[in-house]
Amino acid sequence: MLLYNIGIKLYSLFIHFAALFNNKAKLWVTGRKNIAFVRIESCIWFHFASLGEFEQGRPILEAMRSLHPEKKIVITFFSPSGYEIRKNTPLADYVYYLPLDTAQNARKFIDTINPEIVIFTKYEYWFHFFNEAHKRNIPLYIVSGIFRPGQVFFKWYGGFNRSILRLVSHFFLQDEASAQLLQDIGITNTSVSGDTRFDRVWANAQTPKVLPLIAEFKNEHKLFIAGSTWPQDETLLAKLVNQYPNWKFIFAPHEIPEEKINNLIELLPEGKAITFSQLKTEAEGLKSGDFINQSLTSNNLQALVIDNIGMLSSLYAYADIAYIGGGFGVGIHNTLEAAAFGLPVIFGPNYQKFNEARELIALEAGFSISNETELKDIVETLVNDEAFYNITRKKISNYVKDNVGATEMIMKYIAR
Image (cartoon, rainbow, N blue to C red; front, side, top):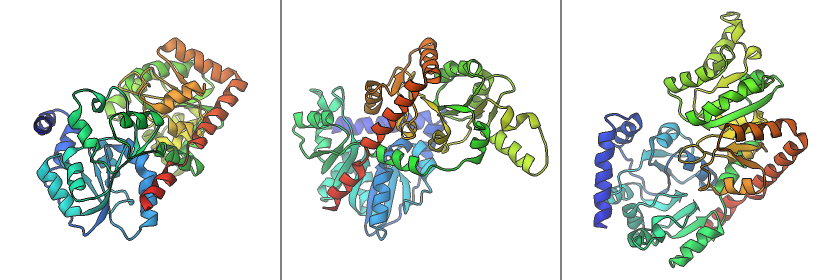
C-alpha cells in the first residue's frame, strides 16, 4: 500500500506540472479545486473514467433512474473529457470529478454522499474508495468488466492489485475469458452478462435523431463517415474523396481544436469541403434570404468536417460505410455505434484489445487495414460488390442484435 500511496502522490505532482502546458491536465487540476460536495442522506453512486465509459454504463444509469426516481444519483468522472461534456446530464442529481484516491479523500467523500450502492463501469480500481465502501458494507459492482492476461492483476508481483479486486461485491463481465482469469486468482463472484454498450447503441439506432442539414448534405448520395479520427487516419482517408467523386464524406475528428480542423480541411479537395459550423451558418443565411456564398450550399460540397462534440452517434444513421479512427494510435474508438446501424466498419491495425473488433473481423463484417492499399481495396469491394456489401450489413446488424441484454441481466441481479 505504501508504494500505491507514493504512486498516487507522484501522479498528482506530475499532473499539476503537466497542467502548466496541457489544457486537459489543467482541467483535471482546476476541476478538483474547492469542490463543494453536497451532503446527501443516501444515493446511488456511479463512477465513469471518461465519456466512453459513461455511454457504456448509461443503460444501467437510465434503468436506475427509471426504477428509482426517488433516489439521488451521484456521478463522478476521472477525466475532463467525460466531466466537461456530461456535467449537466439530467440523469444525475450531482456530477463531480472523482477526488484523488487517498484514504482521507475517500473517507470524506463517502461520508458526504452516503451511497447505498456503488457502480463502476468497465475499469478503474481505486484502493481507498473501494476499501472505504467495503468497510461500510456498501455493495460495489463492476459492470461490463473485461480483463486480459497481460494486466498487473495476473502477474506474480500483482498481489496488492489483486487485493483491490477482492473488495468488489460482484463483477458483471463481458466474456468468459475474463471470468476464467478471475477464477484463476480465486475470484468467483462473477457473472458473464455481456457488454452494456450493445444495449446503448441498439437503443440509439432504434430512434436516431433527425439531422436535416446532414440529410441535405447527403442529398441521396452514398455517404462514407469517418468517426473519431486522428491525423494518421485522416491522411489516408482524404485520398478517398477524389477517388469517389459521386460519394459524400463526413469526417468527425476525435479532437476538434481549430488548428486540427484547419489541417484536416487542407487535406481535402479545395472548394469541396466545409465545417459543420460553416454549413449551419450558410444554411441559416439562405433561409433568411441572405445569400452569403451560394457555392457553399450542401449540393456543391463533397466533404463535411464536424467541428463539435456529440453528433457522431446520430450521424451513422445517414451513412453507408463507416471508418472508425484510433487504430494507428493507442487503439480504435467505438465501432458499435456504427455497427448498430448495420454499417460495414473499417479500422486501423491496433484493435486487439477490443472484443467486438475481433469478433467483427471473425464474422467478416469488420475490416482492419494497415496502409493505403488495404484501405483502397476494401472500400472498392464494398462500393462495387453489392452482394458482398448487403451480406456484410446483415451480418453486422445480427451481431449487435444478438448481443443485446446485459442491462436486464445486471438489473435483475442488483434488484435481488
